[in-house]
Length: 316
Image (tube, rainbow, N blue to C red; front, side, top):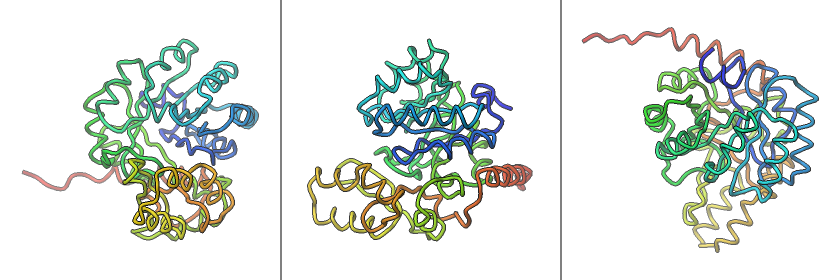
C-alpha cells in the first residue's frame, strides 16, 4: 500500500485510462475486480449513456471505480457532473481542459479528483487547485497527446519533483518492468490504456486486438501535427490514409471529420480498419497475447517484483 492506493482504496496501483467513446462497463468492472481502478470515459457521450454505464458498474462490482471527463471534448460536462453527485461516484479524472473550476465542487461531494497533465506547470496548477492525484501522460500514450511531446521517462521525474501529491505515470507502460521503472522515477502508480484493450475483457472488435498483438516497432503513427491536433493511432490502412491526406493538405474540418469519435467506433468496435482509426500507444509493439485482466495484473505484479530485485551493479 502507498498513498495512492490508500487514497483510491484499491489493492493495486493500476488505473484504467478513460478510452473515450469505446469505453464500456465490463472492462472497468474487470479492472476493479482485479484490484485496480476501473474507469469509464465520458468522451463525447450523452449523459444517458454515461449514466447507464455507471449503473452497470454499480451492479457489477462493489469496488471503487472512476469516471473520466474530458472537459473540452464532452458537450455535457455539467450534466455529467450532476450524475457524479447523483450516483455518488467515488473518483473522477479530469482531462483535456482546465480542471480548476471543477475540483472544489467535486471534493465537496467527497469525490477524489485526479487530473491528467502533460507537464510540470499543469501539475503544479492542479495541485494548487486542490487535486488529489496527478496523472502525468507521456508522448508514448494513445489518442490525443500534448504538443510538447514529452516522453514518460522525462515527464515523470519532472512532475514528481514538482508536486507533493501522488503521481500516476501514463504512456508506454504495459508490463511489470514498466511499472517498476515508473516507480523508480517517483510515480506511485500507472495508468493503462492500450494494454487493457488487448485483453479478453475488452469489448472491442477482435481485429483491433489482433492488430495490436501483431504491431511492430513502427506499429503506431502520429497524425494531426499540421492541425495542432496531435494523436497517436495504430498504423492501419486508414491510419496511412490519414497521413497521405495530411501530405495532400486536407482542410482542418476534413481532418476533424476523419478522426472524430464515429470514425474511432468504426475502427475499434466494428473492426473496419480501412474506414476508421484505432487509438494505440507505443506499448503496442510489446503486446504478444490477449490475457484476461486478472491474468495480466498477476503477471505484471510478478514482473515488477523481479525487476525491483535487480541491484545497481556498479561501484565508484
